[in-house]
Structures are given as structure tokens and as C-alpha cells.
Length: 237
Image 1: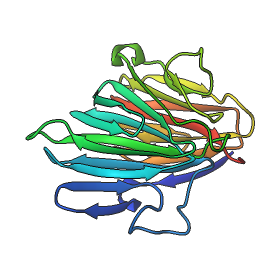
Image 2: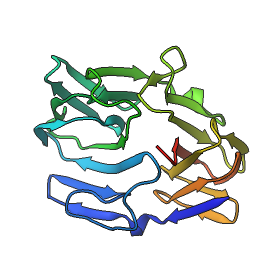
Image 3: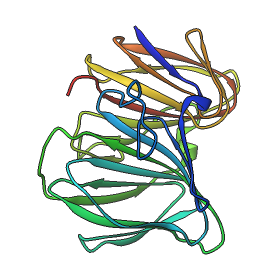
Image 4: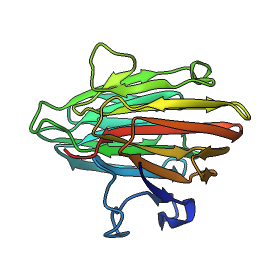
């Protein structure tokens, strides 16, 4: 088993006034050669956007972009013709493929929004850009893994162009469970959204993360109630 621990205070940080951003991997002005990616997971940004603020129209290509609001709502518009609002309890996927422009703004003029945005390298290049948005019930993640994203169009949640799975779990105090990886060459990056958790000998508190590969099963022991985000990705792609 190979383990990489990323404590919360080791992440990159950017304060733009209207945007408070934490970067698990090198992004924008924060560059760290030791923190470029975890396998096919290139970006995991933890953003807090002030009311009425956001990101103007900008391009992407050949990247799977997954947005998971934790609090508040995000307004999205893109060159595919979509104009949507994504709320906490929903997941948005955009396969940028051959190229797409989009903008993202806090849908509220006054209330902040907090969100995770993930970028995952795809296993197919230059595909036709696509958009999808699903909702989930956090009650369905109580003490069990709720799949949000997979490679399979007919599976639970939404899908992307990569052999990757994204799940969320809301753990009760002192509850334990095992996560089994889907493919032998995958690893899983686990972010503590909140609470306190024990994985092997490593304790995770709020926004700590751990990357684990070269194993089949991971045992998670919960210490204090809270949620975990699990991002399983190919380590070689």
C-alpha cells in the first residue's frame, strides 16, 4: 500500500477578496512540483465565492470537470447552450472534449457558495463536449458509499470519460466500513469534508486528504461524525 497524506494546511491558498480558494494540487499562481496530481486527478479546488461574484467566460478542452456545491448555488452558462443553477446536493459534469466556453457565478447576490471542483484527465481526446447535472440525497450516503460519478452511462449517478469513480459517505460516530477499489491499477484520494476519521494509522480532520494506491481495500474508521469525498482514479493513464 502506498500512502500520501496532505494535511489541510499544506494546500495552496489564494485570497482574491471575492474568492477564497484552497488547492490540493498545483493551480494558477500556486505551483508545487511535488503536488501536480494524484493519478488522473489533476485538480481538487475548494472554493468559497462571495455573493454575486464568479468566473467570467473562459475555455476548457480535453478535461472532465466535476463541480460539487457544498453550500449555496452556482449559476452556469456555456457555449453548448446550457444555462443552469447547481445547488448543494447536486453534481455537475462537463466533458470539455474538443473545446467549450463557460462561466460560473454565485447564484445568490448576498450569500456565499462553497464548492469542490475537480478536474480529471479523460481517457478519450477531442470528444464532443457534453453536460450533465444530477441530484442526490445525502440520507442515501448515511454510513454507506453513495456513488456520484462513474465511467458507466447506465450506472448510478452521472458518468465521465475515465475509469474513475466519485463517492460520498456521511459517517456516524465510531462507524467503520471498507472501500474496495474497482480496478487494480487505480488509487483513491479521500478528502475529509468534515468530522474526524482514521485510515490505517493516519487521522484525518476537516479538509485533510489522503491518497492511497497499490491496494485492493481501504478500511475507514470514523471518530467524529462527518462526510468524506472519495475520488478513485487510474494511477497510470
